[in-house]
Image (cartoon, rainbow, N blue to C red; front, side):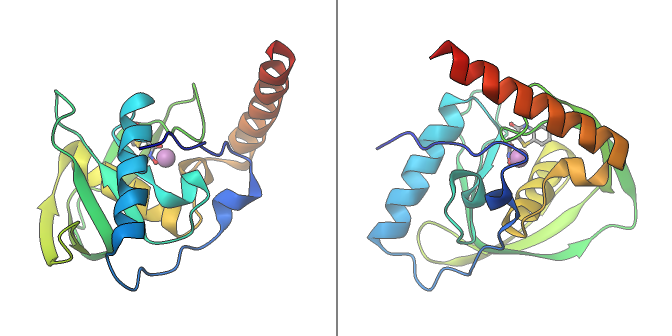
Length: 171
Ligand code: GNR
Ligand code: NI
């Protein structure tokens, strides 16, 4: 297994659109294992392949308290979302140390392929529903800060560029 480098906003590669996975083979299983390791190490509750510069439709999520219930979504699609909306304070491994409220459908139904290569469907609410939508956005090249005002987004970009420079200075 290996830890992967997580891209930081406003990296243009975060806006690439991921392509579907043709088959769940050894190469995909290795990517999933490395993504899970990277997510747990961060720690985060989810990770989309886009964030580690792999532009294929792969997502890992673990919203369990003990971080021991890994969920793998290959070629995920939201097949239904509730008209009821809910606002949640979101964070993102690609936007470190920034959190803000985003309103999204409260419940979603997602269709995907699991690590066993079999298709499944799942209905989610709460943090899992938020996380599924946040990760599927990443696969479309969308970062949660794009739901915020231009003013906030510009401030975040400046802050992230400043942070990146400081981190380079520390090396
Ligand atoms: O770790 C994460 N926490 C989180 C909290 C609220 C809403 C969404 C998330 S996802 C985030 C990990 C991440 O960046 N996934 O893309
Ligand atoms: Ni994210």
